[in-house]
Structures are given as C-alpha cells and as structure tokens.
Amino acid sequence: MTDPDEFFSRDTFARYSGIECIKVSDGTARVRMEIGDRHRNSHGTVHGGALFTLADTAFALASNSEGIPAAAINATITYMKAAREGTLYAEASEFSKNPKLATYIVTITDSTGERIALFQGMVYRKRVRNDQGDVTA
Amino acid sequence: MTDPDEFFSRDTFARYSGIECIKVSDGTARVRMEIGDRHRNSHGTVHGGALFTLADTAFALASNSEGIPAAAINATITYMKAAREGTLYAEASEFSKNPKLATYIVTITDSTGERIALFQGMVYRKRVRNDQGDVTA
Amino acid sequence: MTDPDEFFSRDTFARYSGIECIKVSDGTARVRMEIGDRHRNSHGTVHGGALFTLADTAFALASNSEGIPAAAINATITYMKAAREGTLYAEASEFSKNPKLATYIVTITDSTGERIALFQGMVYRKRVRNDQGDVTA
Amino acid sequence: MTDPDEFFSRDTFARYSGIECIKVSDGTARVRMEIGDRHRNSHGTVHGGALFTLADTAFALASNSEGIPAAAINATITYMKAAREGTLYAEASEFSKNPKLATYIVTITDSTGERIALFQGMVYRKRVRNDQGDVTA
Image 1 (cartoon, chains in turn yellow, purple, red, brown):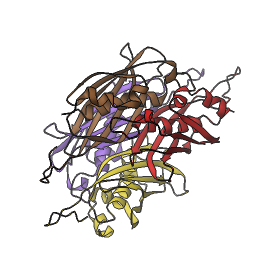
Image 2 (cartoon, chains in turn cyan, orange, purple, yellow; image 1 turned 120 degrees about the horizontal axis):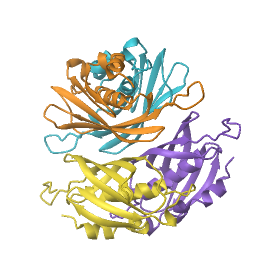
Image 3 (cartoon, one colour; image 1 turned 180 degrees about the vertical axis):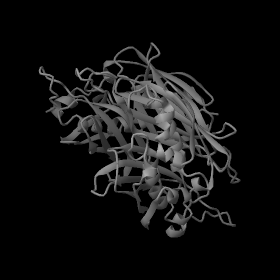
Image 4 (cartoon, helix red, strand yellow; image 1 turned 30 degrees about the horizontal axis):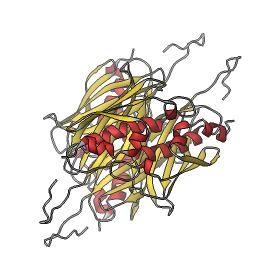
C-alpha cells in the first residue's frame, strides 16, 4: 500500500506549482491550487499547463493509491471556462480498471463549484513478479 | 500581427517552468526546457504536467502567431518514453485551420531526437469586429 | 426545437448500423444496438467503429436536442471491455455548454450494466442570425 | 506474420460499411470508402461513426500487421471538414511502439487530397507465451 503523503512529498513539480494534497483514498484523490501570478498565461488567465498539472496530480495520486505503480500513458483535457483568481480544486475518480490498464476522470472546479476543466487519463499498471515468478500486485 | 517575443514574455507559467522560446513563425513554434529537479514527479521522471506545459506553450505560440487571439479548447497528450535528464524540445505545427477552429500537432523530443510525447490541441479563434461591425480578423 | 424522432429518422448510418433511439430530452439521449454478426471486427468482438457509432449517435441526438444545429468537432473513446453478444446501450449527457461550444459524455454499457466504453465529444453550435441581424438561437 | 487480406476478410463491420483495403505493410495501412447514402448523418454529410470506422479499420490493419495481436485501448478523432461525396481515403502509420503499447496516426483525406479528419489511436499488444512459458511475440 502506497502512503499518499509520502508519495505526494516526492511530487516536486506539483509542489513547485503550488498544489496541495487534500485527500486520497482508494482510487480517488482531491487536490487544490491557489491561483497566483506564476500560474498565468499570455492572456492573463490560468495557463493550460497549470490546469493540466493540477488534474494530473490528482490523477497520479488516485491511480497510485492502491499500491501498484501506475504510469500515465495518455490524457485529454477540455477547458470549459477561463480561471482568473481564487482556489481551484481537482477531484479524480477511477472510472474503470483491469489488471493492466485503468481510466480516471478528473474534474476541475473553482471555489464556487463552477466547472473549469474536464480531464481523462489512462495508466498502465506495472505488475511485479516475485522470486517464484508469481504476479504479486 | 502578434510579436512572439512580447507574447512569450507575458507567459508567466511557461517561464516559471523554465521554458525558453526558440523560434516562432506563421503557424509553427519551437521551444525547449532543460530538465531540472523541479520538473520531477513522484517516480523521479519528468512530470506529465511539465511535459504538457512544454507542449502547450509551443501550441499557444503557434496558434497565436497570426494575430488572431486563439483560446485552447481541448488537448490530448500521449507519452512514449519517460524523460530523466538533458533538454527537451517541443515543436508545434498547424495541421488544419478554418475561420473559427484550428488544430495543432506538437511533438516532444529529447536531445537525441527520440520521441518523448505527442500532443494535439485545438483552439477557438476569436474574431474581432471593428466599429463598423465588420469582422476584421 | 428539434423533433428527435424526425432528426433520428434522417440518421441513415446509425439506422444502417442497427441503432435504435430510446429517449431524448434536453441535453441527454439514450440509444441501443443489438449486437449482430455485422458488427464484428477481425477479432470477433464488436468493432471499435460500431461502438463509436453507437456513442456518436447518442451524442448527436443530445447535442442537437435544443434546437441549435450542433456539429461535432472532436471526440475521444476509451474501451473498457470487449463486447460479444446481447444489447449495448449508450447514454449521453451534457457536461458543459457555452454559446459556441458544448461537451458531452457518453457511457456504453451492456445488458448487465457493465461499462464497455467511455466517449467524450465536443460540438460547435451554429448560431443563426435573423433578418434584423440578431442572433436568434 | 498476419496475412492482411485474411485479417481484413474477417473485419465484418468494415466490409458492411463499404470499406476496401488498398495496401498494408509493416506498421502502415491504406483503406478507402466510396461515399454512399448509407453513410450519411442527420445533417446529410458523412456520419462521424462512418469516418471513425474508416480510420479505425486502417488503424487495426496497421497495428496488427506485425503478427502480434493488438487491441485498441483508446482513440481520438478531430473533424476538419464535412465530407459529402466521392471517395475517402484513410492512411495509418505507426508513430511509436514499445513491447506493450503502440500509437498510430491516421489521416482521412478526400479525392482532392483535402484533409477531412485526423485520428490517433493506441493499442495494447498481447504477448503470447508458448508451452515453455517463453514470450514468443
């Protein structure tokens, strides 16, 4: 079983981007980011890369929450509304899972609950073989 | 006509993430990012959010290079190979364009030219009306 | 206001693919397809194109349900489980909407309720100007 | 090594949709579809499901061309221009590949070479173990 606090403490780019972990439980995660000047793009709104990083961090926490190392293979993001100030929240939940692959949906909302972006990501789950050649994860 | 240097100078999150603009011309852009410790995820490789930000920055430069403000509406990224050190490059090129919508493909490669990620993004192009109500862009 | 029965009666490829419309209401739609031999791919399971067509038909009905002509601009589909027999259902619901763009999520399930595929699509909404130049839709 | 003609002969939904295989070689494939009334959507243009099926068929042929059974895990399609008549072509090519996963890009063009849609798909490659437990593919 992965310790989410320890896992998040090693997520350097998320922390550098000002993201905080609120809660992780089996297959779900919730994170937040207080919008600051560093997050802006050339239009003055929150950068797509900052929004993606926020969603991706929730996705990584959720997909690694069950003890099997999970590597992202692809992801998609759709932007609903430009964000300018306040705090953004990303909530990830597992949509489906088989032994090798799992899919997560992440919704980004602002402080008023309005939808800012919708993210969907897939991971490849790395199964580990023990000395006897059995799959342990 | 947008000045790419001026446009990029206002891209705070890209600059905060260590991204540099190499070249912008009509509908294309090339940027780079030297991998540092701040870019890592919990697995020690470059964070999906950092890779996305790199590609997204090239996408924004390319899609805004022709003087019509372009807002990203959605994007997808596929990861080929984990990146660990050295410099990453993202190259954006326009795949298609109509008066309202345009699609760009961005490829991220490492210093050896190996493919790290493939990004595809779509923008909505904001047409501006002048005082006579004519569409000018 | 679009009449969904009339709209669906003109959806030739959906009908050719054996899709039936169950229900359409504002921003949502539900359709079904009884799996037959014509739907199979080279592996003997339901073709990705047949699954996409099923989801896309629900998406078109939902996105055109409010009287504004809506044209799909892009879509993504993720496959959870191969389908082999029985009836498949696709349920579309609006996730977000602004005057120009709207996003829909469609879930495909089998007769037992198991998830077969997840689809997400975006439309461009064509506003119509009347004789006075006002936007009517 | 998979025989593409035999593989395509079993692709029932592609054939039912009027798709023909032009050429398959290692990691690439080219197919075509003559537009007929059966392919239309409620707006009278070629159905998104028919376009997706065309691209998906090229993707399946290309990804299964090297003898390892490949199952699609997700795909995305972007529409550039509505198609109304004539013949459509889809050309698939491998973008990247590792032992488990591979990504393909498919472009749909019309008879004049104009771009109609851009498709991207990923497969999971099923390795087969022989009686001695060795991976053979």
